[in-house]
Image 1: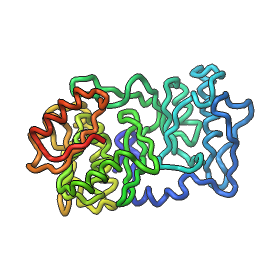
Image 2 (image 1 turned 45 degrees about the vertical axis):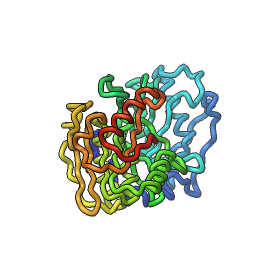
Image 3 (image 1 turned 90 degrees about the horizontal axis):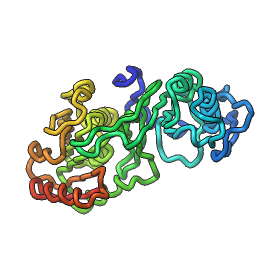
Image 4 (image 1 turned 135 degrees about the vertical axis):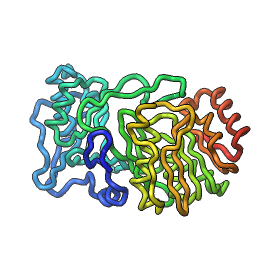
Length: 341
């Protein structure tokens, strides 16, 4: 499928992407690169270019060039530590044992400091940079359907990237547009997926609802675990779209049927926050999957009877009163087991 941000071929299917992982960021025998102190400005020496043999470059060399472009454009004074330039998000992201050697267009940058001129130069001059995002207060997405949505600003390039998450049944690939969805750093073990797998082992559900799906990580893990019916929902348009996209991306590894999309990304973007649930996508076959966009408090109206298990991954977990009200209302209307990952 074409990328909804840049129209390019940014989105690969899961088998293709997973096949590249063993050597995605590994150096070749000819690769070199200095390790810089991240707590200090980069030293006043020329940065190395990409390896002439494999085209990769050590991340510290890449960041030194990024730092100098931002300093030249006045976004940095030149006295800040190297780490202050930006937060690097590699594509694809997965648990790594060592610092990566980056191939072209494998890095999305998140930065509070970067301006438009520097962002344009970074995409044009630093071959490893695929997109530059200026961050702000808050986290992309919504905390409630009554709250104003938050988003960062894509200044240049494309900020679509993928993370790889392990599950007991095998890995899943989760794409997202990073300016409109929160960051999830892949680890050797994902605590939310582990909590889902514990609940599956305890309850043996035939139906599972991921009521606050984000980009679809838990819903995908539930499908990969073989639950016969999985329903994903989120009130934020980007979450509903990328959950659907990720079902398509993982279709072969999940072993599911065709993914039918009932709402386009443009349709969803026109109503960024939904209250009444709208059906976004369906999958039929041995496993049935539905994706909705809507307020989780109104979702029971469209759910089938006898929901066995539901994940309520609320943004405001620290608000015990709100969590109690939502889980209590869900229990009264839907029933079944509930867990908060």
